[in-house]
Length: 311
Image (cartoon, rainbow, N blue to C red; front, side, top):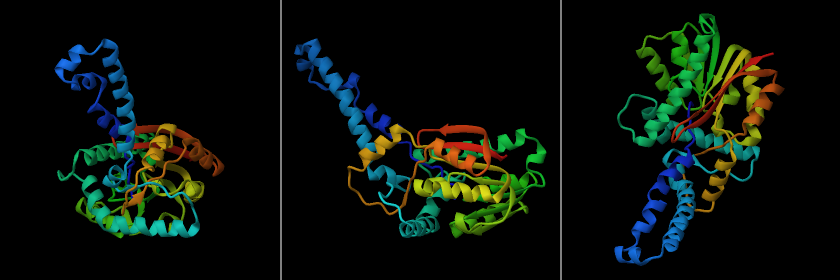
């Protein structure tokens, strides 16, 4: 499922929160008489305190489960086991077949029934899709026409359909049967015949293709499993692999740790960040080299796209 990222950019949420209580507004919050009587040093201290306080509060609020739940994301589990991974895969499947499908189908459409955050994610994800298509178009018609392409985590077909329209034979799959069905419906509505859609988890897909795409899916796989997943994707591709993931940075790690201090249940899916160096190393180990890369960052979408070719 093409979920971009679908990672909530916690920093943007924090900035929004911090704006509500800035140094310029802090000292003004004092009663007029008190503000006039207060020494300049005192008001400066209030402003400094406001800056520090706003940063801490904003970070905490931004990583509180209510923010993560708003986009269907949980904090990662502390321990990884094969059994836990299988159970979590079931949670992801269930989510994207039910409430998650309704949410993301609206995001990945022209529906006006989306809020500002969802609209921002739509724009970010579409930018990543557009980048994939621009890169392929830049390589000429032969990059897609007559090629076999495997689109893993196809969602509602936002990438698979335009690839088929460019003359490729596309085998698309998603862990969610609801997503795959919607993608097939959209393709039929557009008269696209070069793409097929099925419900399948990433690990169960096999075969050989000229090109493999996996956009905004790795966020559902823990760090411990990332290398194996990249190796599996690479094994499907004879020529090229395009993969995107939510990059792991010190700032995001810190903010997620702050969020873990706050209790709160969530019934949706977890979000996993991956160090870019680790993803690159996994691709290199699988016999690929990076040709292109791009980071797409909006207020609530954060995703690194890599294009790798077999060497």
